[in-house]
Length: 118
Image 1 (cartoon, rainbow, N blue to C red):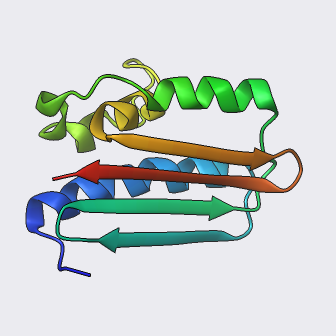
Image 2 (cartoon, one colour):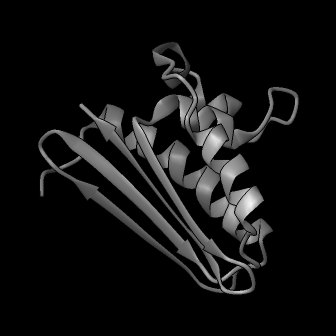
């Protein structure tokens, strides 16, 4: 593991804010967060025991997380995350990550893992 640079910490904080907020909104009572920094990437994993999602909702969330990467949004991420007028915060997360994986079971919870390569 490597230490996270200041610019990467800001990126990770914005992503964590959005994913943890979504877990709370899903009624989670337990939220596990992992951040792993490596020499060439950072991986964030948020696992919760919220209401979970059905297959169609998982597909929709995956679609939001598969946005084209937008470098210019990184500078403004903190100001845009969660702003309803802009669209889903997950759309913004999708623009800031290179890979995303969503696993969910209705009534059991959701795990979202995102990765950015540097």
